[in-house]
Image (cartoon, rainbow, N blue to C red; front, side, top):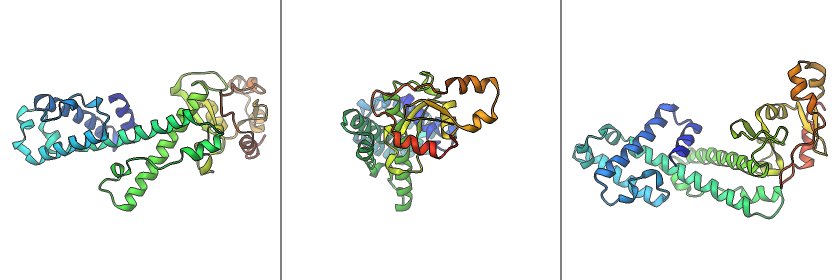
Length: 280
């Protein structure tokens, strides 16, 4: 869980890498404090194994209480990095970890719904498009307008993560053009762009799983697919780009049929719109 939380912090750009590192350090130090004096939180000594939101909330209340005691806190007598407690890093880190658990739970809930759903991609998209659970945790202490902005950002991030995980699943984590199966370089590409149609954002039949080069080319309308799922090239590639690498990456692959997903085949109407918006 620690590695996943670390990845979450860096992805959400929490005021730079310094604060992200401080939050992880604060939670590790809190585990050490609990080892010395657990109060009634023996089950929380290994903090990275806590998945209960209720337990995190209770622990946060204890940390807040000990922080207010300042030098009178038993934890400070241990000499374990006292500034992390007194300056509020432990409390802030717990609040952040709590939000991470909320988002992780919501993402996994959506993926479970995807796995068990019977229906087409459009119906699935409508089924998955819900508000994040435990909203009170996400907007705790914020003004109404700030809270609404947080929910929008969280929902967008969740939807993007879920869309990527759905495409990784149905394409067996392999680029549908090259077969490349390195997740760090593969992308979940929308046929109808994310910003163009809200209803299609979570429709897996509106997606292609592509390695980064082909994702950029597809997004730029340099390549597309015909109704038989064969790769076609835009005229400006064939007319203006003549280097050997272009021939290797694109010209030689023209007419090649992509590796189709085991379900939610790319929607031909969406592909027609993609072709229409380019020079094919």
